[in-house]
Image 1 (tube, one colour):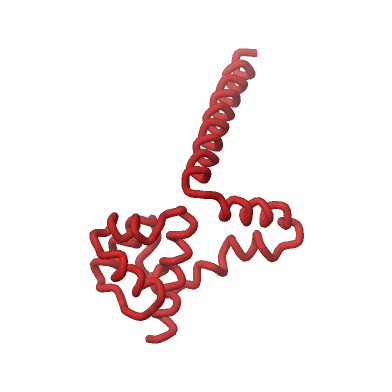
Image 2: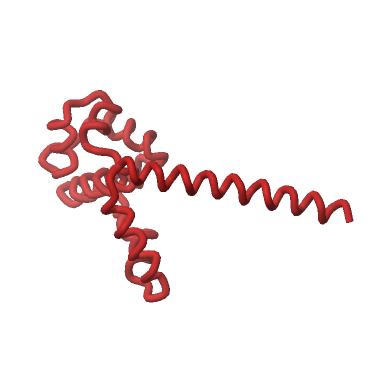
Length: 131
């Protein structure tokens, strides 16, 4: 049980950090006191099933994976420990050091670029289809 609690607490902290959400914001989102939420991330307390279900829904992750699977061993490990991805790891480290407002600006810019790319390829495929 202790290892499951450690996995759960690590996962919810990792997921919150990746979303650039403060403990206050997360606690408010799932209608808890920040101090209560903090005890879940430290592993001092086990969240009830309703809270775990709310977190899994919020992060779009399977309930069982949130509780049982060490998510830090996934894609981030591949990025940080694969020699071919050292530049990406540096970018992620820089991104993590930004303020929430700066992170939001970066994400807005990325969204804009992705929208433009989608429009470009859509127009390109239409032109190619007309030839």
